[in-house]
Length: 404
Length: 164
Image 1 (cartoon, rainbow over the protein chains, first blue to last red):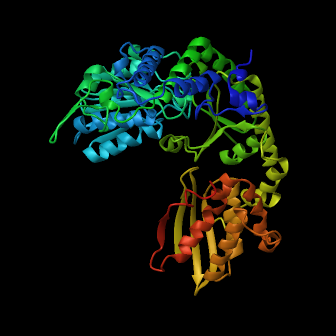
Image 2: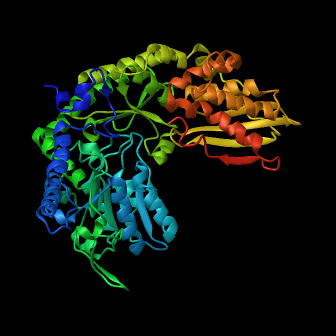
Image 3: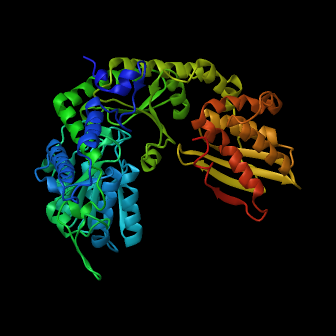
């Protein structure tokens, strides 16, 4: 049965082939309803008012945190800090932990497939601290070679940061193995994982991954824009200084000094995005209703024909792992010498939405030696017709640009 | 379901555009150029290097190299042909008119007077592609407006708000 009916935008737009879910997902009606319900019944500033309505808003916010923690396999909800999304989550770690622990001569180890959000904060931290950025080069099919990665790790390593799933290649990385290598060779390093592309598409139990920080975004997993989270190890979060200062995050403010609130509030300065958290919790309900194993299975069912049919078109070059077990529902490709932007414009004519560009991963584009790629990505509401429309559009673009 | 019609798509990718994309004119470095400028469009990663040779206040030669989509490459190619032989003031005035055309601000009937540049008129239906068509022109403008002492300038690309 089609899940399009659950998503008002898709239901209202027959003929739309939305293949850009790695950028942001569409939203099911239950999420939109939950946000509306919060504003219509329980809206007040949480943690502040000594009246029942404020208490209800506070409860909705706390319940949302607990629900999202349960979805992501986090036993201690207070270690799940709400942020605007993955970008703010990673900046929080790079700033609050990084500034105190990374100094001259230290090393930060990343991979060549990081999104700018998990690259630039570390690059700038390294520049400010006089530390060295070490970038793990990838295999020909866009994977991390564990031996090569291990060779970059040493006692000097203070940060190991990498994505769980690459936004540009779809590569699923072996998080536990990388974390184990880091523990073994770099005992002082924190292990930071960007989960923006994994939590929406795979069953993820953060507590089982043995990382120190794990970040994800709500809007890529059927939730609203502007809410996400970083899950951190309690001992580290308690020792870290706050990221932003203001209301809610303090315990006591004196004229000369202040003390900080307990977790999670210490890292959530200002009025929180309660509606966003409520919406994301509803998204977790929706996804659990489908089952994350079923989400993954559905994506694989589309990924297999998408790769097979695109590969059958002469001139198509597909980037990333050939083994589908190591690839999420993302296919990055180029078509002969047609620029991805031109391809995207032609596909748009057929209602096919793909991403064209560098995918906020310029270091990766340099390593692939291409200025840009086209990227099609699926989700639980994608259908075989979307894949067929994509392939038909690619063939049409080839005719239009007269490449054989 | 989409505002994009076949007519719009064909107007964008006219034969002239496809031809200049396949075989860009003046796609070469100019030795002893008076101006050299690098431009990029940070949103899509398009890059262009432009060389300008001046004879007094006249553009005697223009060449370019770089990577980009069909719109940006053909626009650069058509531009080099259009401004060669023009004075700096004439070239800058032509940019103003070109910009009016691709942003849909050109009065009815004026487009025919744009010569071969009229082939890019279809861009006005695609606001997100205005940046592609204007990249080389913004680079030219920066090159022509900079002092003769400066040979290389890093140019940041079209304004972020353009077309959006």
